[in-house]
Amino acid sequence: MDHAERPSRNPLLRHAPLAIILTAAVVGYFTLGDYLSFDTLAKNREALLAFRDSHYWLMAAGFIGLYFVIVAFSLPGAAVASVTGGFLFGLTLGTGFNVLAASLGAMTIFLAARWGLGRTLAARMEASEGTLRNFRHGLLENEVSVLLLMRLVPVVPFFVANLLPALVGVRFANFVWTTVIGIIPGALVYTSIGTGLGEVFDRGERPDLSLLWAPEVIGPILGLCVLAALPMVIKAVRGKKEP
Image 1 (tube, rainbow, N blue to C red):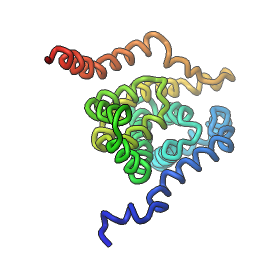
Image 2: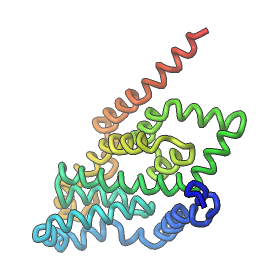
Image 3: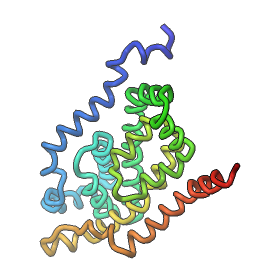
């Protein structure tokens, strides 16, 4: 049997990774919300800090692994994990660990979708006529700008930004680097919240994640969105000028 033919002759195996991810996401949504929370972090913060101080890199590896699982299986608690990164490791390393774990998790979802449903759907969109095919071609022609915008715009769910590109057939290399670059601004915001989390807990409060929408934060992010969209605008203007 030719290696290239195996995916098409084993549809169950091909779709299994994405099916597992979707099943875990549904189960996790209903069962893990109370565990992956700020209340849990507050109750266990002294033990976590003590373990970090005595086994720093083991704690770092465990944190990255847990955050990766949360993202890869779309479990609740990604925001909590991002803030925890700042709480345990500070702004610089915390941001680095957050971006690394989230990026690896995003790549896992992308590859699972690409290997299964994405390959079939992209082929069907290419073979179709009209709106679907034009949508796919338009996205692929501007894929870097679109991928960056999906990461930078705060209203786009992370899972959608991982899944949709795989389903329309964007290049994996572009997906990787735009993911890493695109999530840094948000990671910086959430990690910075975590650096002051100890004082928040001491006051008996919960962290205010609405900081992301503060003008001094959302303004620069929207500016990056404009820069990301600029190549599409220039291309569209040039297209209209051509006879």
